Image (cartoon, protein in one colour):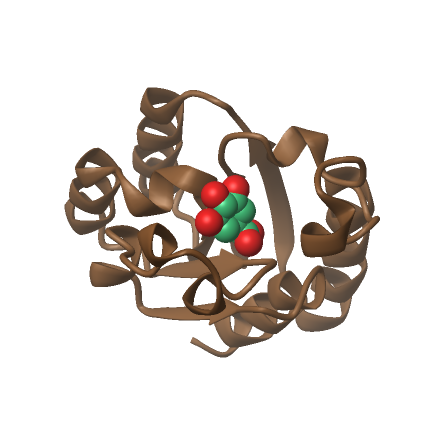
Amino acid sequence: KLVYVLNGPNLNRLGKREPGIYGSQTLEDIAGLLVGRGQTLGCEIEMRQSNHEGLLVDWLHEAEDKGAHAVLLNAGAYTHSSVALLDAIRAIAVPVIEVHLSNPHAREPFRHKSWVGQAAKGTIAGFGAQSYLLALEAAAAL
Ligand code: DQA
């Protein structure tokens, strides 16, 4: 089962970016955890990160073209602004699971709205790096 894990803006800074909120693990650390758990679950991990909204749209389309089983998407701040990502998720048949390290609902009001969540199969948020592993478990079981 091919699982795309798409990460949006500023997540390349993970580990040194607001560690009190996002933890000290880097995106590479999380990729390693996912690959390890993926071996147990029979999932091949395709991990990507971009600060550019349109590239995330392209990768969602690509996930379908490559026959992905599921997509885990942490769209970062684009979660709260991007109608283009909402439309891209609706444009593909592949189930997309929304992932966040922090719990946006426990933070500033502008993080309470998620465009991504309106098209996602489900959302896992608030468990730090563990959110990604929980989402992978959910993806594998779909
Ligand atoms: C985030 C939450 C977003 O509100 C924020 O803009 C991020 C990270 C998270 O993983 O907790 O960049 O998606």
